[in-house]
Image (tube, rainbow, N blue to C red; front, side, top):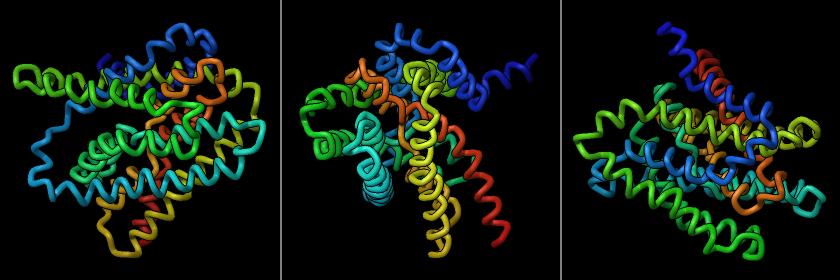
Amino acid sequence: MKRALHFLNHRDFVLSAAIVCGLLLGEQTRIIADYSIWILAIIMMFAISGFSFRSWIPVKNAVKPIAISILLNFFLFGTVLISIAWLLFRNSEYFDYYIGLVLIAAAPPGPSIIPFSTMMKGDNSFSVTGVFGLYFAAMIFTPIVLLIFLGDSLISPLSILRILIMLIVIPLIVSRFLRHRSILPMVEKSRNTIMKWGFFVVITIIVGSSSSILLSQPISVLIISAVFLVSMYVLGALYHLLMKKKGKKLDFIISSTFILVIKSSAFSAVTAITFFPDSPDVAFPSAILSVFVTLFIIFYSRFVAVIEKRG
């Protein structure tokens, strides 16, 4: 019984089940779509509760990891993804896909970076500092990226700032109360479960909202999948090989690779659903991304094993 419960509560099972449920429920998930932003805010609240500002003292120890993370996640990954989106969709009938991919490029990193890095014995200090540093950086970079590549006619900077306050600032403030010593042990014990099942609901909504496209437009699925194969898997593999050639430590390479390629599909999807409720095509890339993020840990763990075996 205990083994069965462990299996049912395993991250990979929960995320895979969310994809299946989204496909089965389809458009019916729109009933709860309006609540997705609040569910994601709760997820962020528990994710950020594991962060203490004391880890940034002295501040100079945090500056370099945050700067590297900004360079990798916003500039390098963002440039690659937006360049591909621009070439393929900027002036086509699939312009909604371009909007969806820009939302992903502008999104903060996925909180799954930290557990993924831990599982593969990466540099946890770099991962935690980089991820939470990027959350703060998103308050500046997300509106700028959207303003440059989408303009203010599609999404107003003020509206984006409001979403960032709801998904980053408020969860950060509430998370400080969750760190009170009287309740922190309980929070730490339940954090992963709450995050996993919170993501279950959000991913179910994401996939359900785009299910009609996922099931009826295989060519679109293949094209968007190819975009993520290049921007995540190929870019991540090339970066890993380059860092290895430069003699960087494996734990740093692993953590920085995750920082490079993993964006929050939940954030970009919730933004798409909030601002473009009548255009499911905008959330479609985020639905595909949620699958590719889940599969990336499997691909990358095997990739690292092969590369390290070869020496």
